[in-house]
Image (cartoon, rainbow, N blue to C red):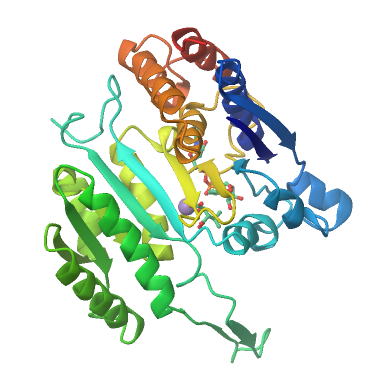
Length: 353
Ligand code: NAD
Ligand code: IPM
Ligand code: MN
């Protein structure tokens, strides 16, 4: 099959790791039966400083023409984060109704967890993050700024449709996994309206999926259990903010943020989905060529999988894991001295064209 992939390298290490993911896709694209055309878009904080907008009019329409979007990361000192992210990343997630943010947490072979005595058999779960609503709402505002009466307010919005569609995805995923278990992140003891609404929807799904076991934890103790008992989890579903926090914590117990992939999915496939590392633009190491490319390469594997190209997707992930398992080419975040380029080269050598 042939596909059009839109590439938004973005800022900082976003562009450094994205070019490596594109190289991997290019190599696979030389296989008979698979052809990928890339269209690169320069939208970033650099673009904003030049043009006053994160992306021009018509950008979303152009992206809509693609089969999938590959993104690096957006956000850089000099442009306020709420300007850069609400100018690019969040509009893409919403316009294309990428209502699931799927973030696998799995300890790759050869990587070590900071948790004592935990190996790959203990850390293998999926975070399913609601990606379009919840705490990330535009409803709110500020009053009396600059006075000692200043107030900031922000509403959380859960819609029945929005909650149900992400739960449906989570339960369907669980059904396909050996443990068939869903854990829901809640906080219905303290958050009075939205979280009980979420819990009621979870209870309804639990009833409709008798083959899937379900439990729920308040987000505070759930965060503790991620560290104390990562082996308890199979599919963890949470609201936008809870899922965001859990999806940095999960990777921290599974080799670090540099190896954590993500897929912003529109499961209906009416609109393109977007694939990006969980991490950001890492200004502290940008420009040094030492960012770990594994999160971006794994995200590219998720992109192929979403397009139905399951063999190249699996081959790419296997090549990543063969290299991590070898433990010879390791970037500084995981204690080695390899560069972004040299690690990718090793993966590409492992990956049959
Ligand atoms: P970050 O993920 O960029 O960095 C956190 C820490 O992890 C840093 O010490 C960084 O060096 C390290 N790190 C991250 N990725 C790494 C990699 N691949 N290899 C090695 N080390 C890596 O998070 P932050 O510092 O909170 O955010 C920096 C900027 O990125 C902000 O502007 C933020 O808003 C933005 N951001 C964007 C996205 C996105 O576009 N999806 C995601 C998260 C943060
Ligand atoms: C992520 C990021 C974004 C989010 C930020 C940069 C808006 O942290 O993709 O996890 O919170 O969704
Ligand atoms: Mn995040």
